[in-house]
Length: 184
Image (cartoon, rainbow, N blue to C red):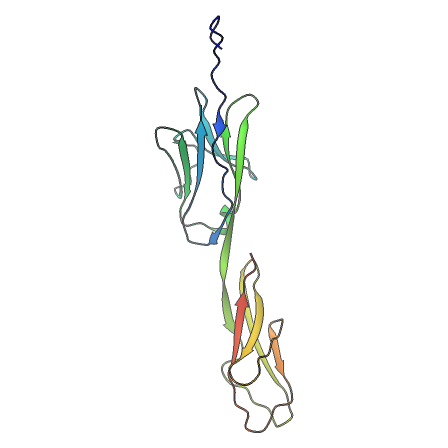
């Protein structure tokens, strides 16, 4: 407050929240922090869960070359992360050094698209009335759910990696597809 003037500078305020982002490993992402009435305060970027200071104003503190920060000269700061990795997952904070400090947070979830492995090869057979077992597995983050689909005839759904089709009929030939679903 200016002495005798009755005027006080408005407090800084965030104009929009940080977004929560989920994206695949290897992609690029940015968080945008928009602040009005910053005055003489500074904006900092922090990885909240590890308490790592990433940047203050436009100065990078961390030595990670995949991270960068920009300021548009007015009220918008952006934290960029290129080629995201699973270890980048976590909570990111845009902080203003007021007393008490002001902050807002956004969460980054990095997913690894599933990689399906066909363990048995391409063919399986059984005598009439017998059973056929098919195997497939998929790895990813988060762990994918496996299901099976049959191309001809009725659909079948197996809820795990191992598919078992029973009571085969004579000369029944079909294709089975192992599919994955990623729940985010």
